[in-house]
Length: 201
Image: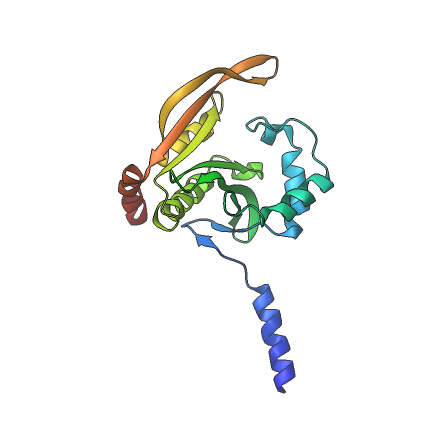
């Protein structure tokens, strides 16, 4: 085998290997790729998915192209990752508004593939992301919020150590009425106890 043929074969093999940024027990978190656009477009236009998000306008391919193009410019304050199960992308999770002075950030997430809802994949992804936040980025507090009728998201946040810090009354309008938004947060010292147990389980 010539050197050129060998290098070509190795290059093909390298391209075939999945990208892994963070690895959990059940999921992998990796950077969002341009080829994910059509998938994200389907998710973000699905009313069953967006009922738990604050987006309400139709999203076009140009919107998602612009969003992905700007991701690399925002990594100082925003980090978005794809949740992958057995090489299948199922959702997005990441940080918004990272504050390096106060060492806090806001997390956001959604599972776009509905057959993966309620099966623990979001919990695994969140635990891995929080480990990265506290033990790599040296953040001290991670905040999140959930609309009061989103019981599944509330439950998984509690599993990951979040506690309720407050309520924004009638904050979100959906299906003809206003709903409360629950403000939640987890501190590093509380998470670390859960993380040790989670790794052993």
